[in-house]
Length: 303
Length: 317
Image 1 (cartoon, each protein chain N blue to C red):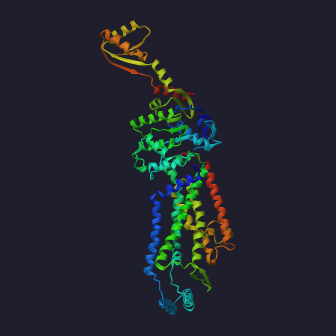
Image 2 (image 1 turned 90 degrees about the vertical axis):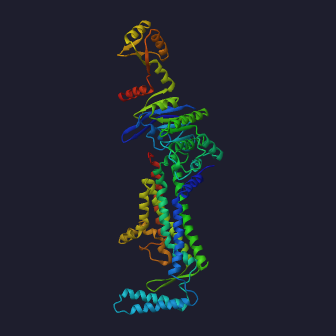
Image 3 (image 1 turned 90 degrees about the horizontal axis):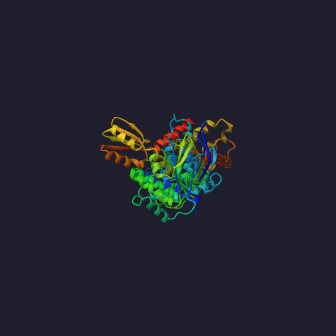
């Protein structure tokens, strides 16, 4: 899927500003940004819920403005919470949305999807009796019913418990293996880090950075800051500095702060222990995605 | 394969899977059956030669009431008319108390107001509720245009309207038939005008005309409720305005009475049943074809407006 120069003007302000991006086949692409950054607005424009001020959306090369129906056949979506008809059963809800697909969806396909999202026991109960997690899974079920090539999920883990989030990630992986691309939006970094292949950071309607999660983690290990809580800080500093004069060491009352590679931590520990220094604790403080995110969004503000 | 038919099926599922719909249908049935029971108690059918005595008694009572000196002139005229009517029955051997399936439907035609009320509620709710439930966004991200989704909803409301009309008709016919005997379509309904004129119509014809014209004017009211439901996204407001349209018609007609252009306003033209049996329309120069044309024009304008606004709307709820 490709988005070109997407812009939405509301009240004289560009809520989404000249945003362009490409999502590869089989990729999980994350939209990350604080609340109000324009993630949901972008998603609403992609699925045609709101009009675009400017820009183009291409799904598998199909222009969504010119061939809305064909483009929508390729997309499955949950925009914000998956609201279902509460007075209908889960199964009736799925029949409802199955009838809204262009291709006929068989009963076997419905059963298959129900099994995939693990709702077999509750599918004939009314949705009003469902927990939030069950509704979320029913939402996923209706979105993948017609085997879309692009799945768009806006804040999909809202209201899911850790167990549910874990299972949800597993579903997504399963889907991408079949060639489905996924767009996920969230304001939670840790979640994005675990779920996505690439993350786009959106700030004030602008795309300010796209990087693969792998890349982000790589760069972190370069800059690990580690605190060693030891019995004799002065002696410890001398020994370490003797071994490696380049090493950056800051001494505090009962601890040393070092900047080093993550993989070197056991080595340092060994040297200290061999020198007869008691090590009470090692606290490794990685530069997290969060710090990177804050750093990037700060840049975005000053731009 | 899946197309508009699927959408209409969906909308119907959402109407008939709601308990509310069955409560409406139940109330209507209850009113029909209850009406029959009350009617048997307080408005008995006099058969055989019994009715002649009853009609004679009516005449005697009317004569007695006219005798008083302080009786107002209007009342005297009414009594005179009443006596003339009853004498006509006696002379021509017509039993005015005769009941059959069709006279029973005719009595129940008042219930079309209740039907209108129920249909307006459903029409007002059918788009707005999707906004209230938040399901509108699930409905819109599909390979169907907004026009198609609106169309399926409108058609489904009309089907619901038809279902209630059929229920009213069939249930009345069955209950009336079981109690008073089936048949009687051609039973002559006598209407005496205030000026002493007399019209005779087959009761079955009156029933079918009233139902048909009532159905048509309800379609226009449904379109109004539907538009408010779509534009304002508020079911309560749409229900309120729909019901007001239903019942404020007479008051608005009175207000408009002194203006010539009043006949081009929608409301006087929704009173289509006044044309049955040669009733006089509220404005000079109005006729059934005229009213139908005016209604059709309003209908088209309302529908196009609804569609246009809905198509342009950003769905951000």
